[in-house]
Image 1: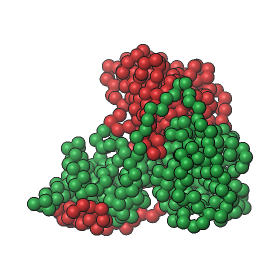
Image 2 (image 1 turned 180 degrees about the horizontal axis):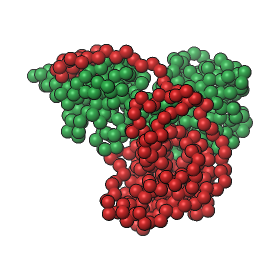
Image 3 (image 1 turned 45 degrees about the horizontal axis):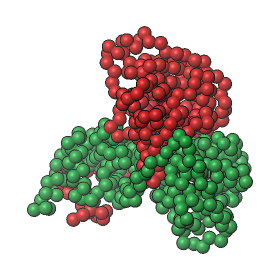
Length: 322
Length: 262
């Protein structure tokens, strides 16, 4: 049986790689051979070329930006699948993987599941068991995959360290992608790169929820966190109301964060939020509801009103400035 | 320009009593008591379409759903807004875990009824959280799909100007229809409210009901089992800290975590 891991973007690779590596390793231990197909922009190979102890690395250079790159990639993936015929195609979960994996699965006559958190191969039954969150992240489901090819995106989360420094001794194949022909009804005007030091990289994150307060309190929180150099995050209701920026959303439809310390304030601790917050090493929750779910997920719980604690934090910072 | 928004009816998870998320024997959940509402991302898509239509040019905004008769209530609420037509592809089956079938039914209907210039869809919906129906619809219709759109504006000559999220940032592009656009969270975009007068007027407006055709994509399956994640933490509760003490503790913890500026 053959599996392939497809990686598109270097952006955030160090975050995505460990959870991909965990699944690949489990499949390898179950007897799968594994290829790694890397799409890279320009001529630059990712430094982690020895990733995943792949038997063969196919490096596809010259991927165009965004939407044209996706067209190139999809066409090339079809060709590679025709040649290599993998049973399982794994994609790191990012916007590119989520966009392309269902399309590729459809084109090669397979199935796809998005945002998977784990996989287990049962060799006696020849069934691949796949886990993912469903019902808005409130429940997990296990799917039994019996028909192949099968494609999946792997959610960034718990993983195992990989060793990019180890020497790669498999087969290395390099391809230059054919240029994406311009389309008469599509024009890419430009792009703004995501910051390299975003929320996912922060060591301390302060997340606010609906119970934190209104626009005024959030503005004060922003000012305070800016002084402290701490990243602000929010739950979906605050994003939808426009009170917090979109790139601060944590949860099943937002980002996963991996800080040493996550402080939550006015957050109930519902599953959709926790699916993005669960990888924090330490969680301190502030909430005035003693029955809030967050207190079953936090390491330390503070039963207090968020507005009072915010005011005291501001006072403490002012005292420091004197 | 014709815009059509696909809207899915889903259980209102906010109404579920937290203890009811516990999965019972035989992988069952008892959450049937909650209301069914429009999927939150589909609501964002409707609002995007309405704002787009307000920005200029002749434009019609329709809504479309796949579901049973119970979905008519949701459609009636939507046509109380500036929606020109509402279509329901009749299907009483629960297809929450069958994005391929849903995509096949949507594509089949559009091939018959005509493909709109812009087909807007929420990027994913609760229950299955499949996040692939829009991509599959685009594949089946052989048209382009732009995912995670966060801004759309009309331009002259039938062009749409879009911003969408991509893995390494935000992309700006112009595109002409027909195109499938997916919408997720967009800051500051929430579905507007309708007036009671408009809601009453909507009672008599027709909803077109179409029988679902043959499903072209039969695959995908129900989960083999549902389960809850185990591993609650033993939380150290500080019940009697004053706000000052709590603030001091938080500040000390932030400093200990090492990223706080002095």
